[in-house]
Image (cartoon, rainbow, N blue to C red; front, side, top):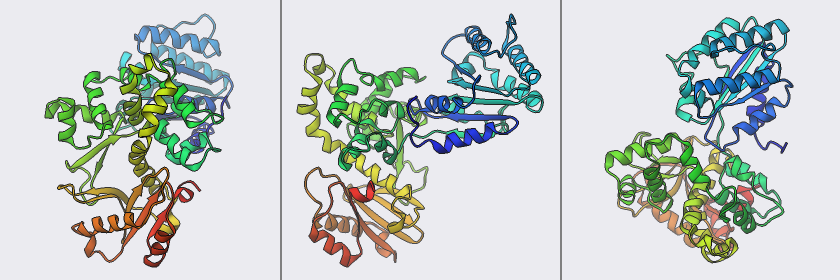
Length: 465
């Protein structure tokens, strides 16, 4: 089995629960984030454990498969074939109690089981309350439907108060994603995150002994590659009200539309329909919604962006070239159509990389602990600050510059200073600092000015120490 990268905390949390007499745990997260891989690593410590992967079928078919899984590891007595879920779980618990042996059970993609058997949460609640003190039961529910799984433990739900831990597994940050190619240059490791994003299933296709171009060509661009249809597969697997309209929304956002009205117009949807679909895509973790620094969280004046860079790169580089890829080699498409546009894509991704660097605490020595980090833009479009970081009473205004060749010079600092000067409130605050983040580093002239004016400078060495 491949090594598990940067999932030590959730792995240890599950192990700690399994050390108790009984435990009921919930693990959920968007598709391809690495939940199953994490659970397989976890169960490898417990021989005789039961792993059941539900699928979209009938309750009867799921029960038959579940009984087969149990019989294969001795979870049911020979020849016993209970006819319903309640009887099956009761016999399973009785068998574990009589054997005085812990039962380790993982129910993966459990949302399909909940659809086929709506009463399953109540059934599990009754079984759990009856048997948790009579047998050593360790049950993990896992799934990809963020809304359904996230509500399982809510007040008023049958399993409220029963989960020992609720783990929402996030996508990898850029600092974790670059671990898949640690020997690459810093800039290429940042590009790796820009093209492959933070989903474990996508990053698992990366070969460190190949170049970035070779990896993207082989794993994504090639029409027969494992990730060529990845975004379409993801949309097909979700219960969207309209895949076609969701695709239109994602296309609009990936191509640069960030405001509600612009997205609605580009996708050709009514206001109500666009609002509904945006909420669906936000709930699935496919889009993020950013409010301006200083605005309320629920403000309608917001911007939308692709939550994972892979979605952005797929719509930018794969979708428009699918026809050409039928008759032109993937390497030629890379050279002529993607490599020249890669810096434009990375300009958008780099802003998110810098935000993650602040919020993860990586830059705390210079910037302090972060209370809030949000962009700011004026309604007239004249003022734009990539990030305003609040640390106590100090506000840090950040300009992010992605350059593949040239160093960042003092003109970037002048531009940032002009935008901060037009902000309606920052000029009246006592503690405002300026910060430039650059993928290529800084000229000596800028470094000299930054030292004299106490401007923060963060380059590749600070972002990837």
